[in-house]
Image (cartoon, rainbow, N blue to C red; front, side, top):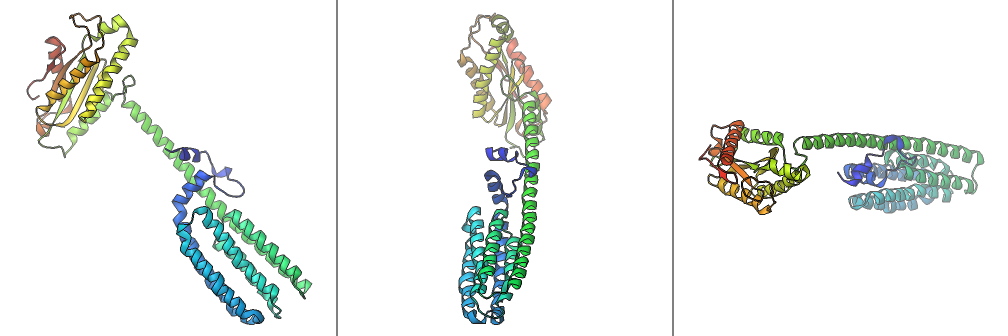
Length: 400
């Protein structure tokens, strides 16, 4: 799990700031999950918005006849072209610039009708105020600007509108007051709707993210305990439980190479008890660790499973091995332990370093009639035969 993912689990829905902005790591995650959907929604909203926006070219015939062709040119050749280009380029924009440019474009489109109202001397120019409220509804509710951008859009739109009402020459004070109240009411209503929608979006995502984090943590803990239950704490090798599971899995397998078999190589450190008694358990643990390291290294080269069977015994399982190859692997393992040259001052047989006795058992190609228990028993019997015959040797009966 990445650092960002770990950090994201500490943000909860109840801790969301009043501006409804995600911290950067969460914003990046949200964009990765929902960015495409946001782009598709914005494109659809732009298409709908342009259709309605250009319908006001028709109302301008009645309301703004003195500047009719100017309004048509600005709406069609200005706002429409810019909006289409913006919609086409949405995929290439970062989330931050996508939302910023949406705000800037919308402000331009929304302030133009206010300008038309202010410069027009037509008798019915004041009735264009209905368009002002619709622009607020479009930006805050249909396009659904991010809340911080909706705040900016609403504040600028209302401020410019009220300024236009107050400064338009020849305006009726009573009508201007009524218009101002309508615009302010529309601003409050649409901004509150935007806040509700945006808060639901943010808290919903954070709640889902927290649930995912809890699930991921639980899965991580479960996996950690599963790994621990299959691992020997001293050597880091797989333990007896893991060995049994892997052997059972192999014997249950239906797609094993029919020309190959399975070799179980069981090793026991020679005269390990006198070594422990003479040098102490810490030295014995270090010895086990050194032997485990070399066994694991050699096993890895052969794609074999290396496990600690218990005490000073180890089991290496070579899967899908060809007949005749097991002897070579067993020799390599025994030579690897000798090459460690770990001094053994208490050996009763006159030798002076750590060695291993090895027993090998192998199935017939394709698995034969053996099972895991009988194969382990055969390897154990071969190991005891090696110890009875003088230790530091390999016993490899014909095919077990």
